Length: 99
Image 1 (cartoon, rainbow, N blue to C red):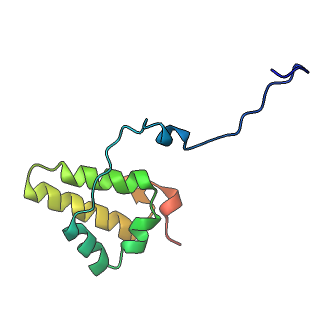
Image 2: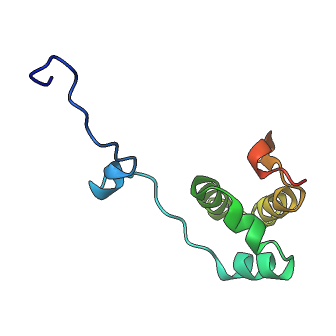
Image 3: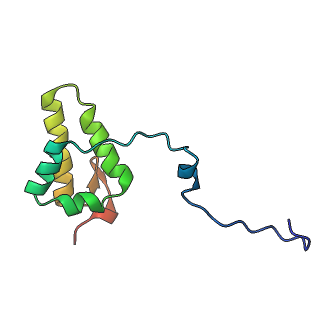
């Protein structure tokens, strides 16, 4: 509180928790084959337009596949969702919808 009884104003720092090392989710690297596929399918801009958490989630989800067939299925789902827009992990995602 200030001397006048009003609450003290503090500057909002939305990413301050990152500076303190509080981010707990691993950053998943982009595999070369997926990067090449995005380029071949002309989907790089669609991928980059997605929020960071979605890009990271897609890559982690793909990396956790235990079988090659599962990995390919997940890659295809990501590609399909990027191509169509408006979908993320089979859920509606209006901000990424294409007009």
